[in-house]
Amino acid sequence: MVIKKPNEIKSSEITPENVYLNRRNFIRAGVLAGTTLATAGVYKFLNPPPPKEVKTAEINDIVKANQTDIISNEELTLFADITNYNNFYEFSTSKTAVARAAEDFVTRPWTVEVGGLVQKPQTFGIEDLLKFTQEERIYRLRCVEGWSMVIPWVGFPLKTLLNKVEPLGKAKFVAFQTLYDPKQMQSGLFAGIQFPYVEGLRFDEALHRLTILATGLYGKQLPNQNGAPIRLVVPWKYGFKSIKSIVKIILTDTPPPTTWNIAAPGEYGFYSNVNPNVDHPRWSQATERRIGEFGRRKTLMFNGYADEVAKLYEGMDLKKNF
Ligand SMILES: Nc1nc2c(c(=O)[nH]1)N[C@H]1C(S)=C(S)[C@@H](COP(=O)(O)O)O[C@H]1N2
Ligand SMILES: [Mo]
Image 1 (tube, rainbow, N blue to C red):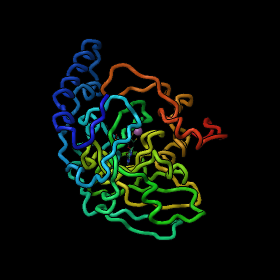
Image 2: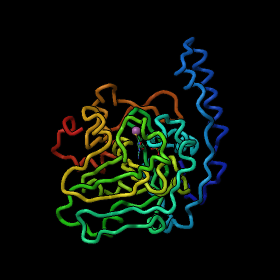
Image 3: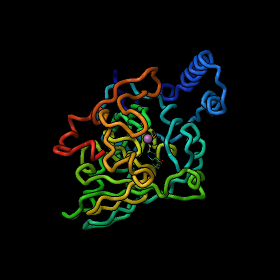
Image 4: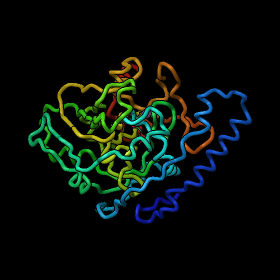
């Protein structure tokens, strides 16, 4: 397929809401024909809230180099799906409800504190971080729940930011934290996980070229439901490592706590690399449903990025370090 630069994508191509709606109706008809079950859960599934149309600023004026790094040549997931099927537990535990629940989330002013084991701790304003934004990266995002998308992120390597604060030699890990504002994030008390949401990477994973801080997608500034104004993307790991709406990045010498590991240590480890050979204790990880497709596809080792990242884990038992 031809990958277009963000400024070549017409809004009619990236918001094909009618296509999205028609497909939903098609699924609905198929399921109705195939079942007589009419539980409340099924009813809810068949009648998701209508997709929310997202209006967000173009990012073109701050994309300097405007280069596209095609790391997946598969068909892009529709903008309407990327922005209406989300995991963001602070706002809602229902994937189709996040877009509306996050509609009024305030992301300006916004700062990200970067510190810990560094020479020059610094707090960055979002305007400065947007200036680092350089390129579009087309990555697969694979959720631990067995679905995936192909998303044209706009962002910059995490390494760019880490270099600015001059990491000390003893830095071995990087800890990340999401904003937690219970006034704005109303699902927090009922979500069943601890907030603020925290995540972590080993330092070499954080410095890897595939690891980016995303400030946009499809050439537009990041929609609230996708983690505005800045979120991590680590494409070879399950989606929950890609922490949203970051306010703090701290370099440490010990492994940082991670939200899903705290919630269920037997189910979610520190590494959480996409691995079709290691099942989740309650379900297989061998296949996935690509959002927008029928049927399932085989999950690839490291989500298809093995050539670039397998060497980070040489000599490690990935069944133990899941
Ligand atoms: N703060 C925060 N970050 C989060 C989550 C969350 O609930 N809270 N969910 C994670 C999970 S499980 C996934 S699959 C991805 C989903 O990103 P998307 O909605 O942009 O596709 O965000 C991740 N980052
Ligand atoms: Mo996920």
